[in-house]
Every structure is written in C-alpha cells, then in structure tokens.
Length: 363
Image (cartoon, rainbow, N blue to C red; front, side, top):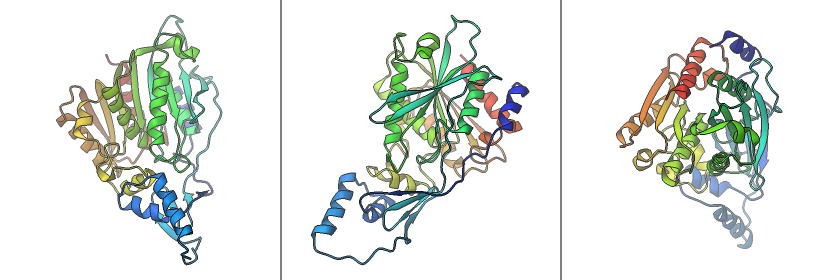
C-alpha cells in the first residue's frame, strides 16, 4: 500500500460521523400508535398510521394534550417525541465531487432516477491504457439506514483510495434515508442503482465512463454496517431474479448489521411494513443464503464491535446453508465498528484495505 496515498487521505480525514445540531423531522400525522406497534415487532403500514389518525379525529374523543417534549421512543441514532417529531443524533455533511490530483482518480455524480430520487458518485481510476476495462465495485454506504451519504467527505476519501489501489470503477449509490423515505426505500433504491449499472452491459448506457471502461463480467458488491446488510439483500435478489449480462465475482461485508442486537427495534420502527424479527431482510433465512448471487464472500468483523456476533453468525449460517460459493471471515482485533474509516493510515486499517483490494484482484 503506497504510503503517499495513505498519508494524503488520512491527513484530511475527519471523525467517522459528523456530530452536529440535532435534526428534527415533523411528520404530518401522529405516529405514537405506530411507534408502539413497530417497537413491539408488529407489522404495520402507512395506511394504518392514517387510519389511526383519522379515527381519533372523527370519533369525537378529545385526548389529553400531548407534551411536545415527552419522548415516546429512543434508539441508537434518533429519538421520537410523543407529538411525532423525530430528532436525529447525527447529521451528514456532503461535498461536491472533485478529482484527486494525487491518485489521478476522477469523480463525478450521476442521477439514476428522479422519482424516486436516486443518484450515485462514480470514481474512475487513472487511465493508463484506453483499451483496458476495469472491474466495478458497487458500494453501499452505512449509517444506520438514517444518515450518512455517498457524497460525504469520509466516503469520498475512502472510496478514492479503494478505487486507486484496486484499479476498479466504484459506483457508490445514494439511497433514500429514514424518516423521509422509510425502509424498504434503501433496498429498492440500491437495487435500482445496480440495475442502472447493468444497463451498460452492451456499452450503450447513459454513462460514458461505464460504457467505455467498465468490465461488467467482474462486478463486486460491498458496504459497511447497514451497507453490508443492503449488499446482502442485493445479492439475494441477484440469486433470485438474475442480473443479465452481469457477473458478481464477489461481495465484501465490512462489520455488517443483521438481526440479533438491541438495534433490531430501531430497524423495525424504520420499516413499517416489517415482518417482525424474522423478516429475512433483517435476519437472513437459510433459503436466501443458499441462493446468494455471488461466487465469493469476504466478511470483516471487529473485536469490540457490538455487531461482531451477528457478523460471525452470518458467516456460519452461510456456510451451512448449502450455498456453493466460498466464504472468508477476518477479525480486526482490538478495534471497534468501522474503525478503518476514521484513520486510513492506521496499521490495522491498512491491513483491512489491503485484503479488500486483494480480494477484488483475485480470480
């Protein structure tokens, strides 16, 4: 790993997430009853929320005044007040695309869909041979399904480094976040983005960088944390529905989130149409694992991460599912969740990135 690259990236790197003023969202209809149902694992829908609201208005019942500062639910990344406001604990900084003079990586943003709004940031490695085609990394960022961005400084620096070191074209999808777009928007948007990439298989898609330089016979899917969860669900869809012309050569899950932690109630709340704790998007089923649309899987877990156990469980259940691919798991000893993005020059971060890169270069 070139120390020049690492020093360049680490010097400008901020903390993993930006802690700013709390972000408030005021939904148009009360969600107190919805919150109770979601937190208990019940399956609910948007229409249910409207029905609850309407019935309280038309029944003639006059409920007690709501204390706007009373908290109904509090989760790792946000709290919900009794009057329906949602206060996020973390906000997201976004920066415009900018070519990197050190690595020669070029960067641009593209629109994938306007309704719903789905976009992506594309990273193109330095072109030394105009006839050469590059593998594609389809990246899904983390952030608990409710914050972070493909356009954030931390992801831009991290993915510029991966792009340069692995000599891949990286497409990082910008998907809808809760509460503006509750789950399953993240899954649907990420699938739409992957289909958009596949639309370049004959060299006549909307994006010239992919038409001219992408090898869709070698596509990798990967992400960290919530992005690992979404990546898994993309691979399940590929194994079920196919993706004509695209060969998924591997999937990389970095400290992925799956069911089995205290965060499960938060996921259920963000997904009104949930299937409770056994929802396969949250808790992968053996059937889905068996038809995973990827030949190889690399999983990273961190020793001090609260997601360590679910990452290990995923690896074990994948091996026992009947899936025909090969899987590998690596533990970052003494480290916590997504530590590698805090300091790209950290020795253990370098090791993680080197293995990620070598995985994409293997045949």
